View 1: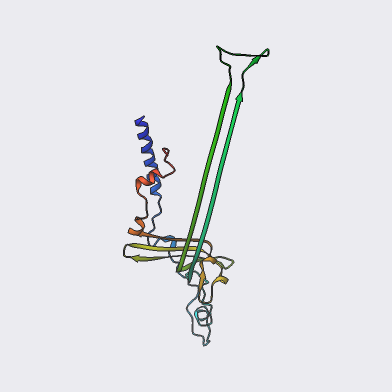
View 2 (view 1 turned 90 degrees about the vertical axis):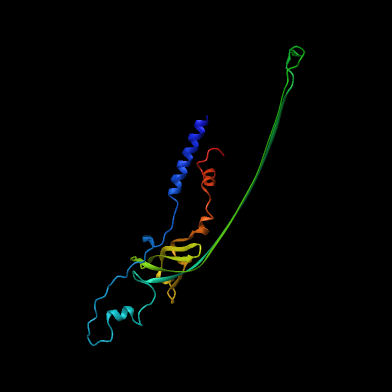
Length: 229
């Protein structure tokens, strides 16, 4: 029996280590969030005597300054706020009883060695459960992202990250998603609530982040692979 328990415990450790290997670990300069280089879609302007040329129209004072090409920069205003609450109460009560009198045969009570056979049962079951969950999150700030792709309908795919180096670790914000050009304001900013298929990550590394991680033994006994509890 001891060998069986030891084998099961070792298997749980192996499974937990496998899960730990897949733990997300953020690092700066991730290629998935790297900015895109602008596409050079113009040729060298030749002096013709005119006051307008393609380069001036795309980059001059009369052009649209909001992002619309690959490599352009957009400032995303983070305005995320979520709140969820759930509560459930369950009460169950069940009881029952059965009584069987003595057996009669031919109008006379049947007895065995002076005892009349009777049967009586009583059962009861009670269950009470209560659960409550509250969660709220808020993220405010701003991050600049770059346009990495322009779709045929004009929508822009953006991505970017920001890292802040602190005394006891680093904090980062990562954003990816799709933006409609019409949602970009005149000052070239867009709300995070206007980003479709948004992926917003906020986390940290270092001492502050490590202190919030559970230890190995704690993760073992609270994992889904624990069969003892």
